[in-house]
Length: 324
Image (cartoon, rainbow, N blue to C red; front, side, top):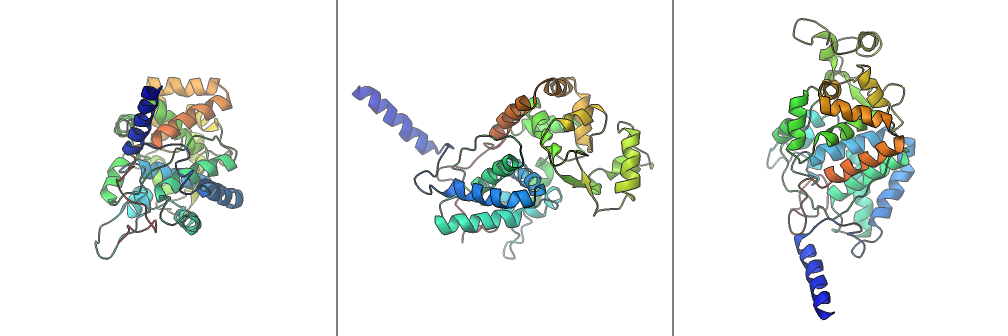
């Protein structure tokens, strides 16, 4: 029995030394942390449901660059002059920074210097989707905040709306995510909006000769041109990614893909690979609960990309700047 206890002690100690993420990581150091995040989300997201899509997008963009370490939150500082992820093209339309800052202030007031900004993003993304009627997933905590943020890395590593299937598969593989994860995480496009520059080339100048993307349903394209992006240079109009269902986390995004009504090239690309297409059909033949369960697994996987734990990184006092 003593030998067993010693082994158990070794495993627990070794696990702690490795700094692995764990459910309830702040159970002793800041026991109210997760409830503070959840309560604030539950109070405010129902009044601004579009922010749920913004927060899960922020989480995704954060994890794809240097791992889930809050590096997307860092401001450009006058001292370094370094262009951070926040100002990179893929992140110029990311919203929710103020929301994360307010959450951080509440958590800091309860437990100064304990809870990372990276964990706050991860928790807020999950909780905001849940409050809008979407799936829940496990969020083990213990992430630490990164010290570096680079705009060029964001531009190169975050999947773009113009990416073809080959590039998408490679970008996901670079983060140890597979084709199934690609299809499932793209399913987050079932909520939220985009802006015309992310897809207007498909409507006005697909190959550089003023043409329409032939893979886009013509009726859908005509509607986008006449009612949404009326000029190629429109950069203010907001467009639903899942028309008619943008506030509901459901399977309609995948139904639209099969009708050639995916908004982005990266959306329609999913239908031009036999494996991703087969998985789309499989999801559509299954239940909504099955989609929720599968989506949850991919989110849990994404949330652990290259996390910093243990003594790596730091716990930022202010999410926008590294500790001095």
